[in-house]
Length: 112
Image (cartoon, rainbow, N blue to C red; front, side, top):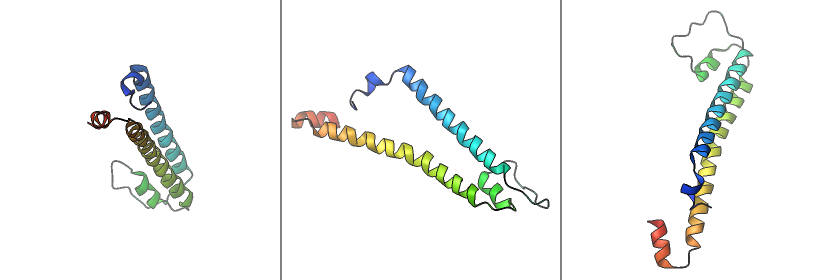
């Protein structure tokens, strides 16, 4: 029911969506941190940054980083592509619902 947004989006559902977003971020950070633990680093490297970005840390590793790169890119595609596909699906349902309105005045009012 894409046109019933104000009825469906109550404070409880909004809080649940925020909670799921936080949990996904925490799980992604935990996964990336655990994947970094399996790497070995050479002792002669010094990190010139206060904040150690994941990609920079992987480049400093002396061991094979193929699995880390694979997991990092897969997580990026999943965490960015999933919501994007959901948004496209939602908008397609809204447009198809509006196009299902028989009167031209109703379509104009819904699109405006």
